[in-house]
Amino acid sequence: MDKLDFLQGIGKISVFVSLLLAFFLLTVKTENKLANRLFAWFFIFSAVDLSGFFITTVTRTQLNWEIFRSTACLFGMPLFYLFVLAVCYSDFRLQWKHLVHLLPFIVVNLVFIPGIYLNLDTDKDTFLSRFNQLPEIYFIQILIEFQYIFYIVSVFLILKKYRDIYLENYANPSAATYKWLFQITCVFLTAHSIVALKNVLRYSGFREIFVWANVLVGSIALFITCWFIMKALNHPELFRGVNSKLKLTKEILPEVDDKSVSTNVQDDLITGQISTLKQYMAEKEPFLDPSLTIQELANQIDIPVRDLSVLINHKMDQHFFDFVNEYRIQKAMNILKDESKNQLTVLEILYEVGFNSKSSFNTSFKKYTNLTPTAYRNAS
Picture 1 (cartoon, one colour):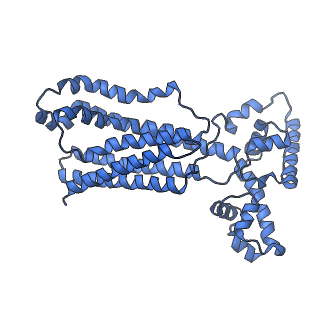
Picture 2 (tube, rainbow, N blue to C red; picture 1 turned 90 degrees about the vertical axis):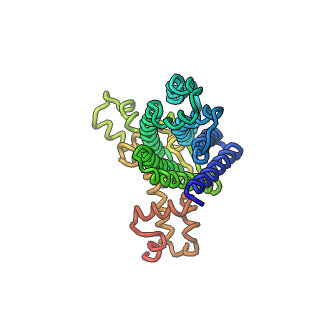
Picture 3 (spheres, rainbow, N blue to C red; picture 1 turned 135 degrees about the vertical axis):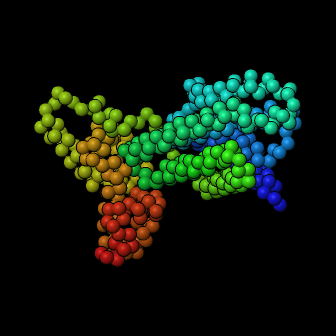
């Protein structure tokens, strides 16, 4: 089997696996159907793009399809961007304004109309031989790169804000959603960098290297798709969105600062609120709820959620996430030191104090004590 046959084989498998994953995402039962549908369409258009690996001969009637296939990749990053929004924000909904993401595809095809679509009556062989040298092809490749940079930066900014909102408003120690999306984005960035290098080789005259680069790209696409399938099968409950209407403390700080109140009075008020908060945390132990949010805690102690957010995230200089975990770790330390509870396993202890995964418990425990829970128990 030569490298071209190998490339076609990889392309066919990649398209099949991509469509299989899209089918799974469209049919699996989940609360976040919008995110799954967006991701499914991402893989459908990826399959359309990957089909170019095994299309070796193009008839005159297939030229329209081949031209569409070469522009379909412009749907990829907008769909991924909307998918990230749908995963990060539980209240995200598609709106008419999101049609703006179709503009690159529309613009490209408007550019193609006079240069390509209206000239399909020319000799097919002549047309295909100069296809990659057409100004329109240069235009689309440059547009794809600018589009990719725009969306990849936008996704990283969304993830940063999501992480900040999560840390300031939620106490669930699981960061699986953020890690998963960050991993996906980094993988896409790496894969696209290789694709961009491959496209440079297209015009370098190194035909042999270009073919092997295509083999590498096809293999990476197949690996990524299989990785997604494994993640989807092993973690169907992975995604947990936050409310997009939640604001970061730095955004609401000017709204809650009362300039008419003297500094001394403000300091006394803040000191009193901190004391009340700490007393409530110690006596009522709301941190034992693994899904505790800042909204729920604010309701329990009868403090406006904005005031509580500023109090913890700004005045106490802690994320709500870290603030709650300190109490969890302190209670875990007390249990580990208690000889009468030696029969409790570390797994039982972490669930008892409000954690829901061993990895997050070990990470947080070591952060506060520089020891693993087992090592701390043995040293006590």
